[in-house]
Image 1 (spheres, rainbow, N blue to C red):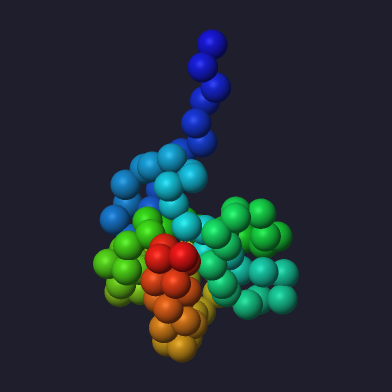
Image 2: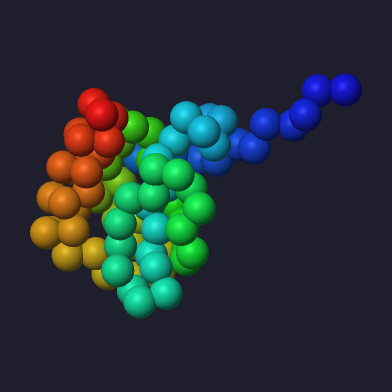
Length: 90
């Protein structure tokens, strides 16, 4: 019997994909928001495709803020975009 692959929904494009294909955005216990490429950090998580367009869509619709239950300042979105580019390329 084949093992079930965990599915998560992207907060940008709202497509369901395998958890491993997505990047986890996590609100840590201290309230800081960051990217979790390993998927193991403690805290509340939301998922995004590794595509800057999905980050822009999530920012515009405020879906990350609703999912993580915390207001996200613009500088955090800028940092997430930089981390996403660096993480996807390296």
